[in-house]
Image 1 (cartoon, one colour):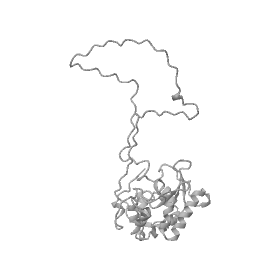
Image 2 (cartoon, rainbow, N blue to C red):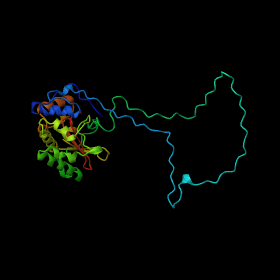
Image 3 (tube, helix red, strand yellow):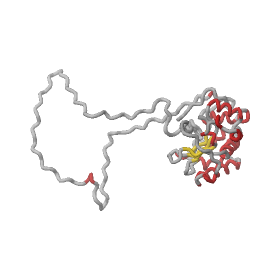
Image 4 (cartoon, rainbow, N blue to C red):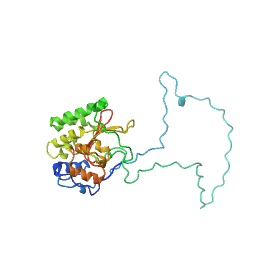
Length: 293
């Protein structure tokens, strides 16, 4: 589900004041200058239109395979004996000005109409989709064992890390993908080139700050979410799925490698980790790299 960033969320500390505050704003698809604060974010909730269906399409018929047995619909049936025609019943014409009686309504319950999504309800797919895990789900185990990852997941993580260490953000392009398989880089969707978008998120003009953040995120522990379900994911860092107030002192040290202490206090007030996170599917597809909520 898509949640909105509350108005009391403030910008990150000076360590990332120029790049990261703008990064979060751009992650929502809002073009602003780096000096703006997170409290100015007023994201909309994109909503996917309800799919239209047609109930009047004629049933398809199956053509017989060449040289084979015809389909049941095309088999000629022996005609029944003709019934003796019956004279139609005489009807009395209606008097001029009299109302014609309405046809009786068909018996049985009326067909149910497909319910349209309620206002504010997030679309099931596409831009605006939230990456937040179910808040009612139990906290998943925190894992640091990279060797326990499925081979495709481990391979994609390694490729992303190798790209970040080159210092050239263009090396992420083949990993981001294109079309329907493109990596989600913003909760609000993006327009234009994805690599250029990442450069705009960065505090520098070459995108190297974003590369550094990406490397830090993938170097943290991870969680395995929704195992066995279609939305199954491996997500870095684990703070994404762990209540911040439950972090131990060593875990807070890990968190401060990614955000500042001021960011941590702001996120505690908000109630969740809302900085950058990475999701990779069991098949090794890079699903998202986003910030915000």
